[in-house]
Length: 267
Image 1 (cartoon, rainbow, N blue to C red):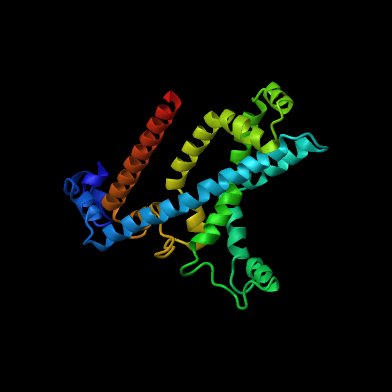
Image 2: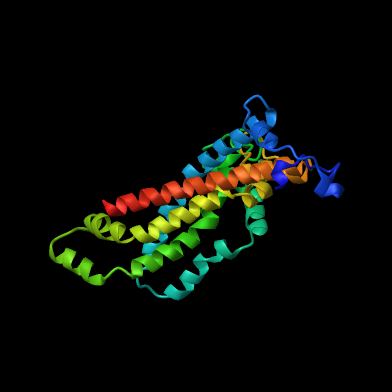
């Protein structure tokens, strides 16, 4: 309802009597001629790039950790608990530490890269063209424990008889992985990827903590644009319109993913 109003700080006290403007907010956002429309469209490109890198990397790391945790070794229970530390650490703390690590002059990341001879002068990570990479690295670190926990549960549900039979038939470790492990993990993988896709488009904390309210052209995402327009510029109608567009976009993407999954299962 707010997205259909010309509601801002000027008339917020008269909320009910704010001018009704219909779809004007949506037209201004979807117009390529409007600066805000171009910014909002670019934020979708940025979040898609972020997801295309973060989601696969998180899944690969989660699967590798889950397979290691599925082996029997001394202190297995303690290690499983420690693996969850990144996930249960508050976002403000976790991403704040990562932000400090990526500081150009005193950050440990530049120090390590310089000592290894990879760079010859400090890199500026938090401003400019490289701003997305620190956020991606920190997001993968923060998100992999949840995926590892889910995939570990999936691994433990695979009957051991399948692996024993395959060994008798002479299957090597790679054949067992691609012909038993991955196919048996499909239901868990589908659910995990769906959750990651939804969470990807809701990403806000990591960008806000790392880069502030205005992350810049290379790392501005829908959530930061919405936050800035609604709660900094105090244009509540436009902010609500952007939130609705983001919701609809995520719903459509989710429905397409679910339909594709059902078609693959049917085949």
